[in-house]
Length: 76
Image 1 (cartoon, rainbow, N blue to C red):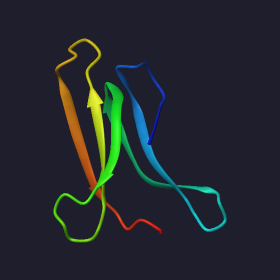
Image 2 (tube, rainbow, N blue to C red; image 1 turned 60 degrees about the vertical axis):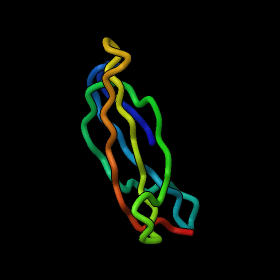
Image 3 (cartoon, rainbow, N blue to C red; image 1 turned 30 degrees about the horizontal axis):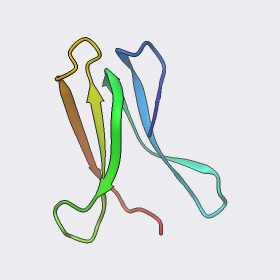
Image 4 (cartoon, rainbow, N blue to C red; image 1 turned 180 degrees about the vertical axis):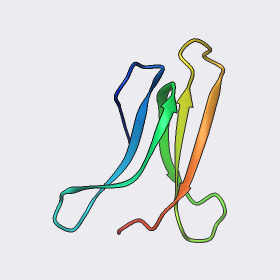
C-alpha cells in the first residue's frame, strides 16, 4: 500500500502487488483524506479469500480513523 500526491492530509493511495515477472501491478487506486496509519491482510469473513485493510488516519485528530476493506484475488 502506497500513499502519494498532495499533502499528508489529502492525496491518493494505491494497492500494489508483484506479478510473476516481479513487476509491480496496481490492484486498486483511490483518494485518501489523511495518512495511511496501517495496512494488513486478513480473512475476516472466513471465505478463504483474503481482504486488504487500509487504515486512514486524520493527522489533526489522532482518534479519527477510517478503515477501507477490499477483497481481491491475491496471487500466491
